[in-house]
Length: 313
Ligand code: GRG
Ligand code: ZN
Picture 1 (cartoon, rainbow, N blue to C red):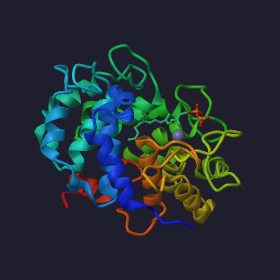
Picture 2: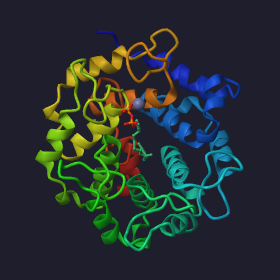
Picture 3: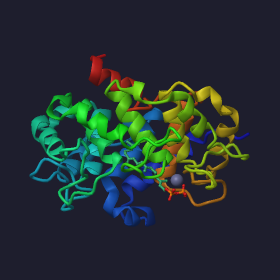
Picture 4: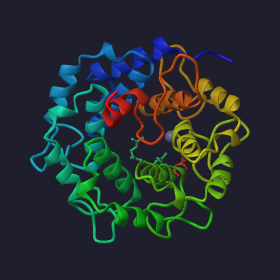
């Protein structure tokens, strides 16, 4: 089995960050703030966050903030909770959350909670448990969960639980590993994991591992490196990670690397992108691969970053 090509991946991420004319940067124009979070978190897990100019990143990012307090994906784009969480996470990595007007950002997020406890993603109103997670994770990092009705938020998430133990995007919607991460993460952050049937959900999640060692997101689907994050983090939060074959999953992720030019793809042989590079490296961190910083499965940030914010060390 090959090794993790750390230096190549660092180079790949720095090129995407710097080369504004590269193919990837053009494709990623709308989601640049998410891209910044994926790239910078990966660098931090690899121990190379100091390779970027943090002042430059923060000054660009603050220009993505809208007067409502929310952040857009790039300068001049409409605000959405998706990018607002990325902005908070990037500032958390640099230990610079204090550059924010924390009240203003928290009020923007809290203003998106609906009567039934659910969250809309922006002023247009789409509702999804992704946004419940994002709101709860963001407000926890800003230490302002008091601005929302947590009990209703939790009840809404529980109303999205299915008979198979998993969770969907709205009540009655099919279980999907991505939504399960969001719901389990939000329940973990709010201390509400007693609502999860751990054995039932653990069984559904560990059945996501296919012959190649990779994980899929739903029954009958192809394995994909990103589920090394969505599925594995959920299994860890419910204490059932020993139900999958860790060595086989490590091999699947390492086989999805571009060993020449850096980057990780969704599965062996495909083209690499920064999204799957993040999920591959974050997955390996969850699998305790040597030399990587530990990542927190609920906050999706390095454990030392989360500890510094939440317990001040
Ligand atoms: C901070 C890590 C982090 C996340 C923020 C945006 C978000 C919160 C969570 C997204 C959760 C989610 C729904 C992930 C799934 C993404 C994905 C691979 C969707 C594709 O689904 P399918 O089923 O694709 O169409 P496949 O190919 O697996 O069938
Ligand atoms: Zn994927």
